[in-house]
Image (cartoon, rainbow, N blue to C red; front, side):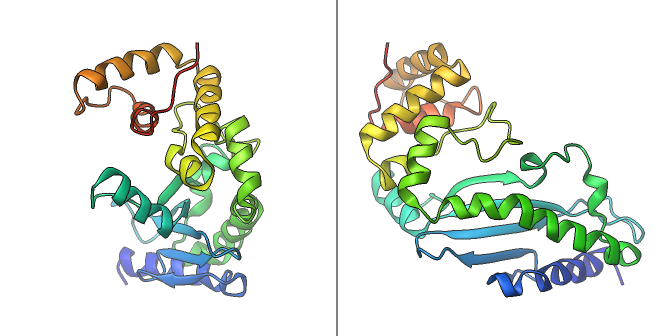
Length: 229
């Protein structure tokens, strides 16, 4: 078997540990997805790898996402664009665990699957499931993000993370989104950056992003969120 085939086998073995949790496997097991109990969101776990694998070492990099089909539809109408996604947020599994820098934990080569797959599956359940669970109560998660930003858990570093402005506007309201935006600017020390970006985008709607957090600034501007003094 080549490394791609082994990788797909490993992904499907991971899925076996999530069938009882309601996750369905798509894209040859590289994506696991389930609908939230409140039917508002999709909880997604994806597995990617590198091209540097060999039969004895096949790395899997898990990511977690929360998506909303309703939000995607709203974005298309709001921004008059077909190039809009359903993603509310996406982050690596590693970023929400204390296992920073330990990618070697997830080697799913054939001779390591019996060891690594149960550990990986348990790690996902311990750290990703509570994040997913937050989205079952829409009022709570909107208020939580408004006050604390995208602080998914105690292990997640929010530095250079974008705030899900569209999510806050659509599932909350403009007032809540504005509070969240200004709390975010204070916490991230980005008030000056935001003021500068607002001026630039007023002059040129196609202003390019200088920093990753400019995505937050642009979404805030397009939704007419005010920067508080």
